[in-house]
Image 1 (cartoon, rainbow, N blue to C red):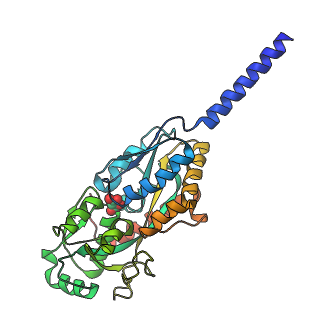
Image 2 (image 1 turned 90 degrees about the vertical axis):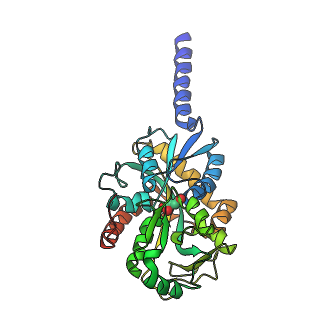
Length: 325
Ligand code: MLT
């Protein structure tokens, strides 16, 4: 009799341990690497979705800003982290779409070296300028650039970032060659735009919407087919006479390759719950963010998006004459 009791207890113990091991994640805070300076669009989206994700997961999501090289420094660190679910990262169209075309020695493959978790937000691109820029609309801006491009400087967040790659595309369409000024993120770049010390940039709406609404910077156009509900007075590029410039970015959560499927599922579940939470949605929508549909939120959908974005941006950037690192 005693033997049976011991075996039963041992069995339960193993089951409990197994169950605990399975259900225990996360047992401690999770680091989310944001590969740009605090205060920029990637950071803002990470903090908004991370705030709600931490509630679902029952552990703090700690944002770690690791800037440099257009976001590839932070993403490289994330790709090389332990695949244990305790290091994740916020990547985007730059780090997981444009970067391979611009960094021949990139230390990661966006389509192979990650466990995609899910899309966090779509981010339309807005053409913005300092308040003192001598043009009041996109036509005036283009006319000014034709005559003065060599005197104008454009801000961006480093080679391969969203602001850099969408800026390169914009400059190639308008045939302008401004001086490019790199920042550790478009948070700091926006500060200089508001200080009138840098002239213009193409940036993600979630960063610039509050300053446009506050009248602190100029917005010439948004590069999406429809106007944004967050910026109803900002014309589309088509309305403003530059229909060829159509571009939107996106931000998404990734884990290192080899992260166990049950941990990927838990992280995706927390992200999906955040995107269904009214307050989280409102915070993203008020900034002009686009909430992914249910179908767009799966890890498989993100994997397909990364593959298509790398394929899309590589020829675009090469045609635009974008130079490597
Ligand atoms: C970029 O790619 O331009 C970055 O998202 C800017 C940032 O997040 O600071």
